[in-house]
Image (cartoon, rainbow, N blue to C red):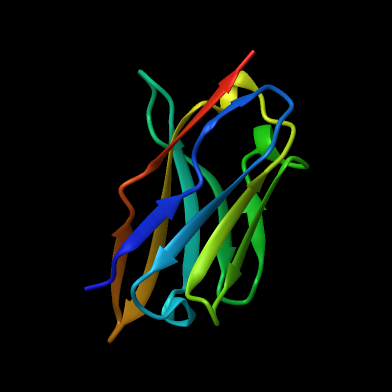
Length: 119
């Protein structure tokens, strides 16, 4: 059973930076893609960034140019570098991973880490 554990969430002032980490109990090299989601109070969870096994990345428009997703398969980890943070970036950030095993999709989630950006 793969487990994902996020860390790095904190309270930060607007304009500041944070780096979120996601540690996987299994090999991240087996993941087709890894994602970062966030959920603000009273809002639906949204996909923030994705990185594929080939290293391709994608972002929602609101974080483009400010956030960078990366993965280190040697360390079985993924990261989300967040710069120029805004109050609207506040929320619980979740790491997720997808894998195809024997033609079946498997989805894994972490427990989340709180990011609070004060104005």
